[in-house]
Each structure stands twice: as C-alpha cells, then as structure tokens.
Amino acid sequence: MLRYLDTAIAFVVVMLGISLLITVATQMISGLLGSRGTNLRWGLETLVQTLAPKAKDNAELLVNRILHHPLISDSTFSSVARKFPLVARWKLASSIRKQELISVLRNLNEVAQDPQSTD
Image 1 (tube, rainbow, N blue to C red):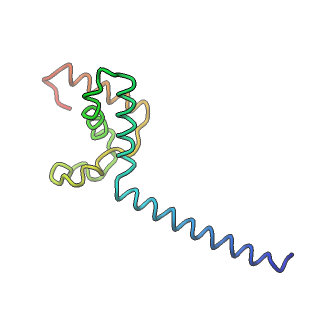
Image 2: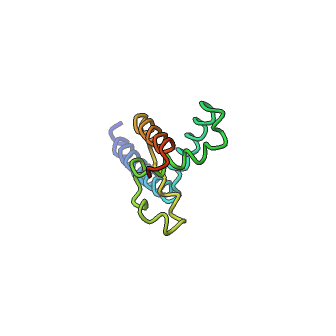
Image 3: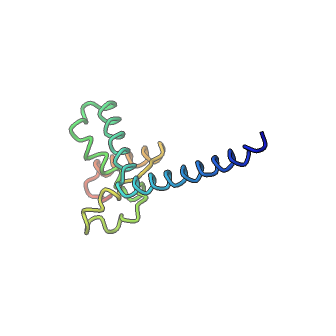
C-alpha cells in the first residue's frame, strides 16, 4: 500500500496544478470579455422588467445608468470610456450590493425629479 502512496500524492499534486491553471485562464478570459458586468446587466434588466412591467421599455437605459454610475463602477476604465467606446463594456460594474443598488436608484430618482442637478 505504501508503494503506491507517492504515486497517488504526485497524481493529486499534478491535478491541483492543472486545476489552478484552468482557473487562472478562465478568470483571465472572463475579465478580458467583461462577462461579469454583462451578465449583471442582463440580470438587472430582467429584474427591472419583472418588478416594474411599465418600465420595460426603459429597463436597458436604467440599468446602464446604474452600472456606469461612478459610485458603483469598479473599473479603471471609467475615466477613459467616453474617449474610447471599445472599453465601455469594461466600465460596467461587475458586482453590486443590495444597498448600493437602492442608493443609486434613489439618487437617479432624485436627479430625474430635479432637472437642474447633474449626476
């Protein structure tokens, strides 16, 4: 039994190494494609369309304003997205907390109520 222990340990170490490389590659590809922000946008659009059917036509605009909000967007491309439209996908927030979403919605509502202010 002990003869095969070193072979089993070596196999486990190799599998862990390969698993780590696959995880790193997956995260790199996900980051390059901006898929977390895109999936979050899809999920929030679905949420808005489900909770407020009257806002279905404006759901995409509302969600884009939420995910591009300077308090939410965690992207380093936030300052250059207007100059380079290709990086706009990476400007999307990749995650959002419930309280952050509520705060930004209140902020956007206040801006919509008071046309003199800017967001």
